Image (cartoon, rainbow, N blue to C red; front, side):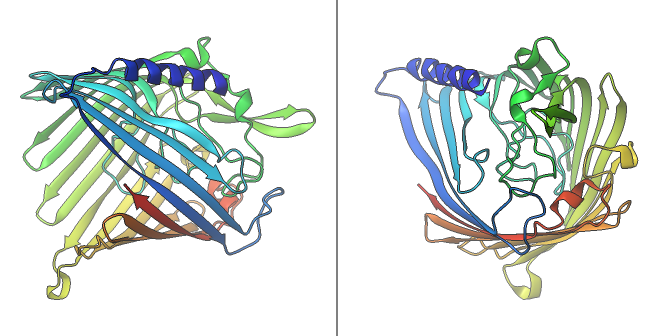
Length: 402
């Protein structure tokens, strides 16, 4: 199945690149990054097969950009490759973007493979539904796989309307037996199941309206198609117990709001999801207050507080069902773009804690170093976060931009 998808993506890439005009007026630019990442774990692994205290990986993500027709047409191609020292499932390639954009007077048309992000909150993005999570890149859900789509944007005085046709579903990636930051039972991604008879060929659709009204940025959408969050079903395969991802159909209505009021950022994300098995509401809301020029310097300090709630309570398949988040962000506003984010989440049902620290700084024009720390304390086996209880780690990333 993965081979067929790779051939489909390669065929699409060839077709789009062959469609580029040969005109001398075409503008072309190459940029991107290469990076190395080293993780160091503070404790021995929790599950069998995770025979590693450190893990090294490398990634390359170039971006090729063409523009022609006086800027009305452009094409972006962003391939991606990661090579991991220990986990074969984490060694993978993807096309993050291969899309053509045409700009009209009051409309835009995009076609190809793209990444679309929706959401305003800091610690969880409930409404972000278009792209599939690349869960082997990182466990926090921030990394996404490219999604085939046709997207028509209509620009009106009363807002922007985005229409999406999504032909082809991307299955979520999961760490393998050798990977850390996984559950106790390995997920067999090669045996995925679907509710729809069309399986990964189901055509999903979405419509979104977004608008800015003074200090308020508002968005609302309806999505119909394959749920990006799979159910993990226990199966016995070859005498071994594994988890198999099962993808059901869903309708989802989402809403996001951000209000910028002086030094305050108020943020809300809500969703209602309906499947054949259940329907429920979930919400994430909070604020960020920024102290500008602390101690008469150029540095800013942002204080964040958010709360996440899921109507399903302890039956939720999400890590966030009754969780309080708080943190701080320091931005030095210097030439090196030095930043530090520290946050903590507290699960009010299971009394578990997790801490994240992210620091980054540029060196020269092309280098960037990041040091991230993730620390977990989850003793209740009913809590999904308990699978990471012994996966505290520091990660050093060195990136070279070109």
